[in-house]
Image (cartoon, one colour):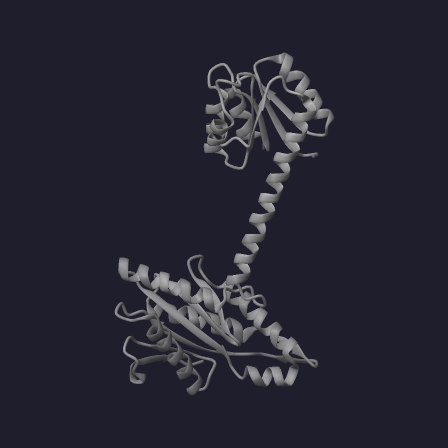
Length: 313
């Protein structure tokens, strides 16, 4: 239990001092305070893990103190001690946020067991939360590139479309595809192709704003959601991504190899549904391929080829 910081709060030095000595001897880092007000200063500055408090304190009592701790730092466990078994109940202490409730006279061995149980439950809870967070992250993240996956793409796109309609703010979508990627895989192998995908994922993330999000759409296709961005601005972002990827160098069999991407841009039309919006960006991407690859194409709101604006490299 080394590095676990326990704070004892009791105005009776005959209880506080021997309890502190016992817990220090048991391997804990221990602080002590006579009042809840002094204890709050220690909680704010000293990284306390568990508070052991008497229920009868000068000024703020132990239950109100527990309430205040939970309001300020929900990650701190509280063990409440009382000598008034008829005046206070376990349920009342738990309702205030206490993790355990002990009656006086306190047997230090029992206190140690209770303290270890509280800390074990805390560890288990933190481990569970960590595992749930990892599982959630795995569910929305592409394992190879660490970009978000297509499931998360559609969830986020619908959220951004809703915000765009609600606040009348522009929204643009970018789709891009690695040119001749099947040939690259066939020539150099899928492991080398995976290195290209990873590098592209890293490059794209480094070029985006905090509000932008990038996704591996599937295979060699990627998408980027660009909130607060009109189509012409998205073209600039797309051109920057295209040129950076084209400048990346991969060594294969002693030769320097480059890859390129074809980029399509669409700005959201408030009357569109999700499939139509994605389809326009997809059509713009294939327009880039039809015009020679390694370029950015922008199709305006109606899905009409004659209204595109194309940047050729």
